[in-house]
Amino acid sequence: MLYFDVTVLPFYPASDAGLKIAAHFYNHNMATHKGKLEAVMFGKILDENQRKALVWDVERGAPNEILEQPWQSCSCIGGWHYNTSIYENDWYKSAGYVVRLLVDIVSKNGNLLLSVPLRADGTFDEKEKKILDEFGEWMNINSEAIYDTRPWTVFGEGPIADSDIRINAQGFNEGAYSNASAQEIRFTQTGKYLYATVLSWPDENKVVIKSLAEGSGLYKDRINKVELLGYGKVSFERTEAGLEITMPAGAKRVIAPVFRIKK
Image 1 (cartoon, rainbow, N blue to C red):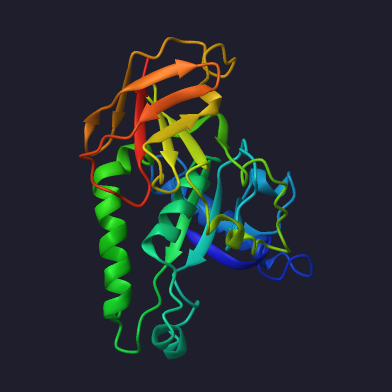
Image 2 (image 1 turned 90 degrees about the vertical axis):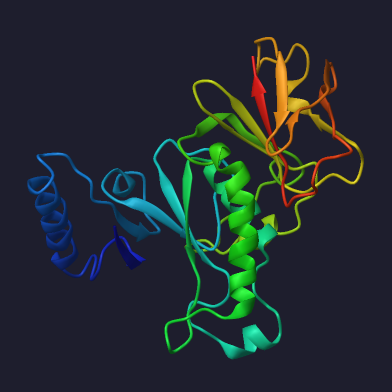
């Protein structure tokens, strides 16, 4: 992976140095991988043609749609460089914030590149460790809804999903996703399952997924089983209002519950 913090490539369009770097990077990688391209190069503010040669990187943000071409969001739990004032004022992103970003990004065919700023001695502080531990705990239970998945027919539903959230310059719109409620749901899928991630634990004992309503053109198959990852099978009813899932009383309250849906 080669990441450039510039528009398109270094020195573009004044010089072809960036193009030469790209050509060497790709050609050398293919030569050392039996003709298969394993290299990935990132650039910012790319047009449609440029995204065929480079992966579009969106800084601290995301488009509000599924993109056909893979893309990436780069973000950080604090500042891009270690900042003691961020530490002292508790301005780090929470683990819940990071989970919401990740799920939203993956639902749109994106990848999250997350930076954890390090102190001068190369270590992270105890507040960062807590965030990473909580994030890792969520991933240990729910990673199957992230890894090896593809976007579904729609990326999600909810007030944020339905909003027209514009990207500013190279990104900078991730704040719109920080306070998502239980109405905000994101979808991923594998060949076997559909995953619905609720971006916040619901205050009530029921979750309603409108996109999976009885008669919905988005999901025409019969739903035979719904499971809460980390818990097991849960009760549900499919109505014209949506797939109504009853939250089990004994389930551990987590950052963002994930439902595995099987036809």
